[in-house]
Length: 314
Length: 254
Image (cartoon, rainbow over all chains, first blue to last red; front, side, top):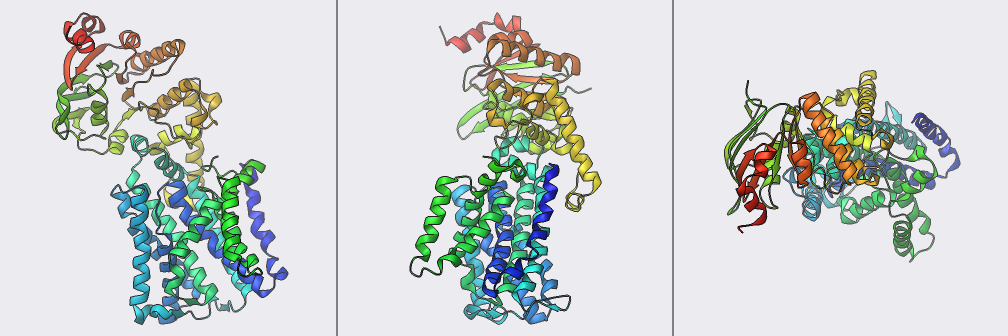
């Protein structure tokens, strides 16, 4: 659809955002930008390929620690670590696809991939000389081509560029024969193979791409928070990431963005009501799923076909 | 020249059960060959064996003279053996058009790097495939529903789209698994005309599993009868109709 070009206006419209926010609000906006690719990558595996794999936090942590270690131990500037973080995430994605390639599915796949995230946490804790162990590691000040990202607004622009790239490339992938193959595998693996699709190769590709995107998100996280510790990559984090794609809409890029925005921003709003934060957060998730079982994306898809991701359908 | 499809002494066992027991037959280009028999006779298992989704324990399956029984389903499909599924194998999340595009998967020539870079070549390949898919849908008169989700189509439309999808790559051999199930009589007649046309005019070899016996008798050049995994008859429709063992297979030992 031609109107989709209008999507390029969205990042332009976001350019003045840092002028409108105080530093704390700016931090929350940056956190949303970190969680957009987290959702995008997770959604490729769960929403498009249809595989219930819970290895996403492993990719996120590996990306974050890759960026942190390269900056701290090798003294590389942050922007140089973004691609290696993505590549390490992609390799982790390929590794995490092994059970699925062996035919493990559903709950069994969920548990096996969950173990991958926990194994990584064990490594962050035990590999102390490199990762800083349970206390974690301090990440040096990030910079892009000598331009120090020493205020939140500068991080915002650096992150915005990465998010636009990740969404643009993932959109191209999902709208091609590759994306169709993913959804075909989700629908009926036997029929997909009967169409000449090497399903194993596409499962590997989906996991690899998902890991790559989430690894990049990890490098952004390292730049944003400045301190990495194993407890940031635990099961609670996984549940939050899973909630992002469910609340946003499975298989939808628009949904990944909306889910990341709502679930990252909401706890910050609820912070003014101490003692009720968790309760309100839980109620919010239940209400969205109750009234929009296909996620926030379905709201926009109904409003205008321009928002209807090609392979996301009600 | 070797026959299009040749099965010799094909045996498939599941644990202690012999689902297909030493079955041999050949299918020539342009021939419609029906597989009939009671439920559990091994027809679908034999299909799965040809398509590569069931492993064979003995015998061999040759396609144009090459052994295919050790290949994976996607390799067999890429060689030109395409199939439809008994309970509707359409991808429910995709439209009719997209289903056919998946059928064309191996013919859309776009590499992943060109695609991510958004090269003109990859966009052209996609546009050409979409045009081709619409033409194919128009051939079987289902183009008007091209943009409907597969799940929203009528039973007859689904069957047509599935046949279009299987035919998209111009395969020399087509395996149809109970295509007439749930179709109203006029639709069955249309299906019969399509099957005959594909064989006579386009020279496609067709193996058909079907319970609708009038359809089988009117479209087939040859009918193979299976019972308890064994081939009990192989002949023209008229010959098979007159065969005593066939009556026994269907009616039990009287």
